Length: 417
Image 1 (cartoon, rainbow, N blue to C red):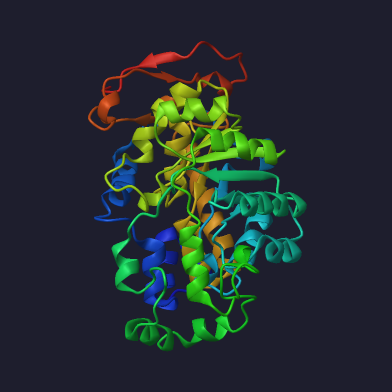
Image 2: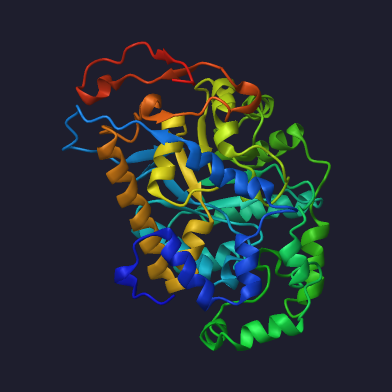
């Protein structure tokens, strides 16, 4: 598929274009889930099953999409989530994505396993971004990463809790993107058949895991990849949050939460926000979708922290569904990486523009005027969707914000209405 940027209409358009411009192994890396990819499919299926209520008796001529995420003003409640090897999709992809996010007045999170380092991005972008931390066996190195993020001006730290070990992604194994990586005949052919991508990569600042630079010579990619995997720490637990909290003075977001009990523990140990996430279906397979996990986590948090969500978001309508369920904001990964692969920085800007415009349209068509106060009865939830929480009652936020009246006590709505 080949469309000029100005005719791109959806995230799926960007996906189809990216698949023609990025070598197949890296497309598979972005798109694949772990094992049988059941969680990957479940994320999309659950979002698709949520139905909107079309409310037409509201004046929606004035709509507000502006919000805040961990105290930072954003043009609309989305952040570009951390994506490892983002720079393999497009040369210097982390810098391009961060610039696009700031142009759209939203935030970007840099992964520990990015190709570019914290300093690479900070030097080029010169505006605050967020940093995602994988806690390593070598706590000295983790402390160093936290300090580097602080010196770079990062305003929030995202601690990922669902990577004690790496989930097995069959596509990566077949493509030789395991540890150590292999240059297979298929990989070589994929690169040769994408000369534009290959030429672009000649301008990349680095082709290694930048945040690990200095620990292993960058020329020894296999050794560096092995080090990255060996540094995953299967022993970290709730006390590790305390350790990070003592090192980090800024906002702390705990990522990878699906269970209410884990959410309560995270808050008790100092989390400012929870990111409900199943790693985009890339870690534990047969895990619940984030649609299913979000409401019980919100109940457990009970307003003590912001609750964000990711996994499966491909449109602004998906975002509105999550906001209606009670999320404060959304993180996207694949959605913006498709834009990056298709058109570079301009493609990421386009992805954000699409998400924002679709969110705005969906708000208008459901009678919502303020993204910070999306009534829960905007969505209808199938009674069989919520698993063990089937039949639970969910509060519905008051529509009184539409008229500026004081908020009333939330009403109650049965799931099977």
